[in-house]
Length: 430
View 1 (cartoon, rainbow, N blue to C red):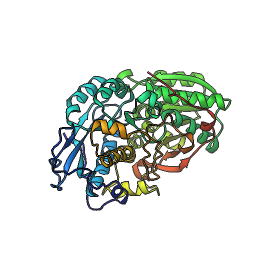
View 2: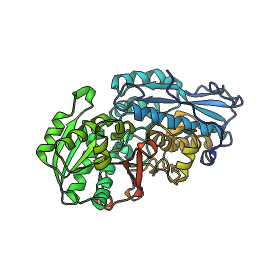
View 3: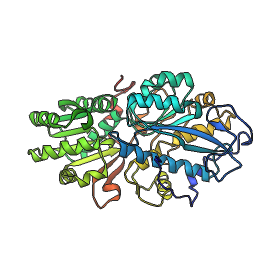
View 4: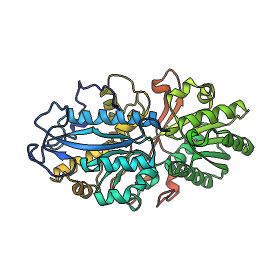
């Protein structure tokens, strides 16, 4: 089935125009390089251009993050459509639909799908799933396959962990927890007894590690660190709810999926819990406002993201809005748009070097400085580690009257704790 929605094609976005290149090589030349052809992209109106094929491996259906993954894909499709409308890159249009595969976040399906599309693509526009991507790094290294990260694991910010293969934008889950707790302490109250409910693995582990680092730096206690999984694996969240009630925290941090968030919040509040909840980006979906937990979520829950809001004033947010003719289904659209900046910059650099090849992309990735147009902070690629001074958070609260069911209450927030932690390696490793 098709995983893309109808996207408006009526106006050229100025930022994408800045990515346009004078052709580095004639689009009429033939090429044996994987993912680069002299023939036009399927369905392209630009018959004078060749085609750059990018792959997508994402949770688009039947997985724990399908709503987020599908919306992120819409954002990426919109981004690259605007690149093509503005002239393409190096005499080529960019295609990210032909080699899109749904993995449902299944590691085996991720691996087989990679093998299926690898011969046909220059790079991956998205590899959804931290563990899934890490498991493929050896093969990606052998294939010179650069990818955009669709997750915020802290390892993507360290070249020692990602081998200069994975492009990322925004903060890590670890940073998200630290910055989010700083904001929470300023906006609500200083938490002293914190419970963390998190998926097993790098997503939950990274977020929980950040929470622990914040607690140590600010004299708080982690009352309980509770591992869980998607309801499709564990059945329900009764055990985490019972553990939280026994620990009696004043704040619950969540690094789960939306379904688990609604269940945990709803059951805790129904059981008399009076503290608040702070969640990572993947915990939210506007559909939660249609659940029984909606009143509790609206009253007691916030979540954070590394990207400007849909209604944001940044140039990137304005361009993302202009690219479609309707409000997206959820915030993933903006995230998908934002994480595409680094790969666009990399393709531009490789084209300027006359090396639109996999090896050329890897050479160009060193010390590249992509511009996120104020929509997202992007660390220089190839840097040894992240710069905490440039990382910031957007904070949201549920609001059924707001776009995508949530209202931004602060954008560009930077706390004080992160700069004191002296982070020099990923917060978690497999």
